[in-house]
Length: 140
Image 1 (cartoon, helix red, strand yellow):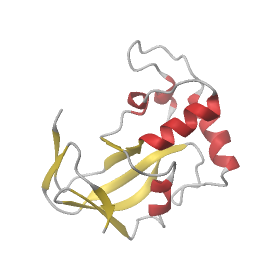
Image 2 (spheres, one colour):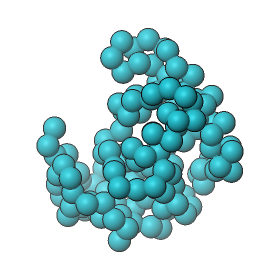
Image 3 (cartoon, one colour):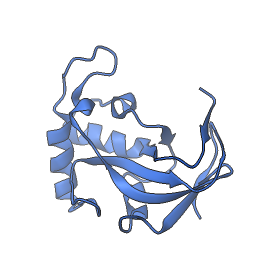
């Protein structure tokens, strides 16, 4: 897919690939990004830098992607679906346990419900626009 259309609706999910890599290193085995089933994959950030953009719920910080503006509302709490292999559908990795352990070591809890099993962020579109592959993502 070369682009995603965003409009005023629910949330768009953002996944920092450096955060997935950090989880893989913590687990000692590869975790593929597609396991998290997120809308937008981000590069060029430090692991878990995106979580610093979540200040409270609902959020007050905004990011720009292409000509789209988003309000960062929360960290993305993960459910058991991330333990299912995205190709086979088989539950083959205890991702939630590892993710919770890693985030607890980082002393992180999401602002909305205080969850530690988080990966990525949820952001509400504030305008209509188009996101294109390789668009820069930056704080507004």
